[in-house]
Each structure stands twice: as C-alpha cells, then as structure tokens.
Image (cartoon, rainbow, N blue to C red; front, side, top):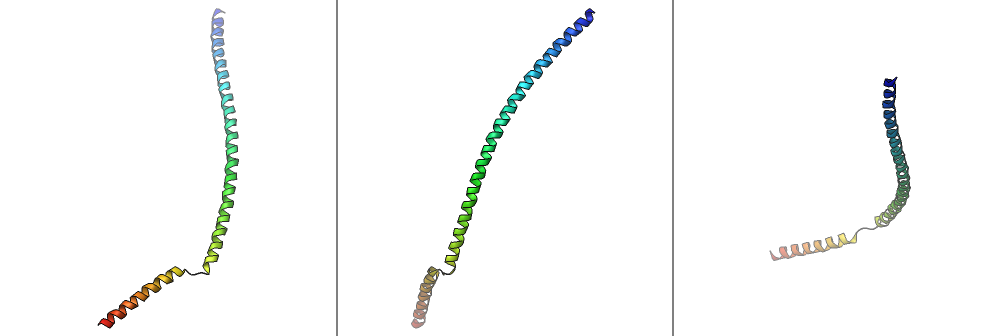
Amino acid sequence: MLANDNLLADFSRELTKLIQIGQKNAAKLDTVIKNQERLEAIVNDQKVQILEIKSKLEVAEREIEHEVEDIKVKKKGKKPDEFYHVNIHILAMFYTMLLIFFNIN
C-alpha cells in the first residue's frame, strides 16, 4: 500500500505540473486571440479606407479620361500650323539658294 501511495504522490505532482502548463497555455492563447481580434479590426478599417481611396481614384481617372477625349476631339479638327510655317521658310530659303546658284552659273 505504501508503494501505491508513493506512486499516487508522483502522479499527483505530474498532474499538477500538467495542469499548470495547460493553464499557462490557455492564458497565452487568450492573449493571442485578443491580439488577433484587435488586428482584424485594424485591417478591416484599413480595408474600408483603401476601398474609399480606390473609388475616388477611379472617379478621378474617369474624369481625366473624359477631359483627354474632349481635348482630342477639339484638336482633331485643327492642324498644327507650326509645322507648315517652319517648312515654308525652309522651302523658300532652299528655292532662293537654288535660284542664286543657277543664276551665278
């Protein structure tokens, strides 16, 4: 019977240690769960903010596209005068030089 008592005492000590370990683990898990819930709330808030910014950017992008299309339509009928002015001067100088060259010979 004495051997049984010693065996029970050893088991009770081991059981006490295991229970303490389980309690510590449960407390740590509770802390982890609370932190995870807090982080999920922060992430959800940021997700809402990101979606708001994204929708504003999409609206701005559509507005810019409409403005670009309007500008293209307005410019489509016009031809760049600068190109023709520069070419006219170059051609006039070229013909003048040809006339001078052929008149000299």
